[in-house]
Figure 1: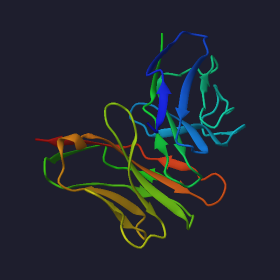
Figure 2: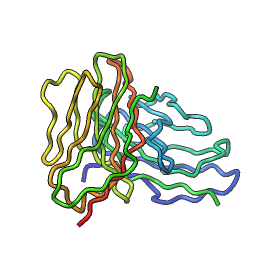
Figure 3: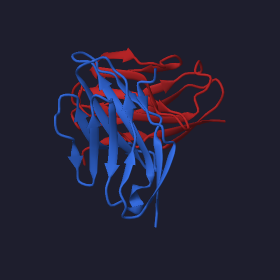
Figure 4: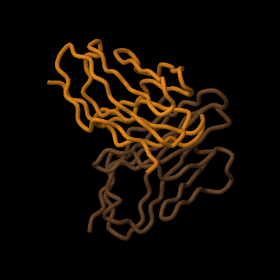
Length: 112
Length: 116
């Protein structure tokens, strides 16, 4: 089946711990994005990547890191520098800039 | 100024009735695009409809239509014949710019509840 998968569905982080959220797609899309959603708010862009081995910071990149070693994968690491990581994280992809973005099912990150 | 404004935090609609969700936007670009997404309680963002700034006709997709009023900078979503499964958060979004990366900005959403 074609689509975007995110794992895990729920993730718990301890203080001072780095955690990695997975985003995989088999749509052959070039561009991938990470968004953060807080309750009662819209989505805010963390990082985006238009091609393999290249990525750019979004509006709220501090405390996060990404890699894009393969076209299909765009993992997001939430580092210990991110002091308020509790949120819903959504990965999105599109074929090219300007095209409609399609979203994965999301990962909910909670701090213990 | 907010790029995307959704002034209705919550809306109720009777099943089988039509409902309009408001969205106004702010941009100085001539080329831009407007999107509506649905987010059910499961969390996934589902693409509903798209309108380009140069499109002369209002976009329609099944029971969804986008009432695009360029001069007023509004892009309201109309859902006809509401169904219980339409209960969800609805987000308006705008893509700006041309060439290179085109940023997408999301509104804060409207929670729609369909009443049987």
